[in-house]
Length: 91
Figure (spheres, rainbow, N blue to C red):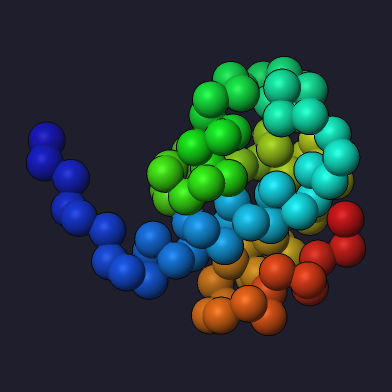
């Protein structure tokens, strides 16, 4: 199966997701958060850096739960363009 290349907007959305998760993680280590969510630290690193711009739903849901981020708020912040979504979450 051939995967359709991501659009620039989809890549930017993935970068916003990564930035929001990194910001919510705060001072906690990547290893600690990843382990609590049941994902590898490398998976979290790829999401946070935008190298995995379309992570699986259950991966995002697990990370959001560990970081106490409501999925609705996270999805809305990622759907917006620009930087205004980065500080709109109450984590």
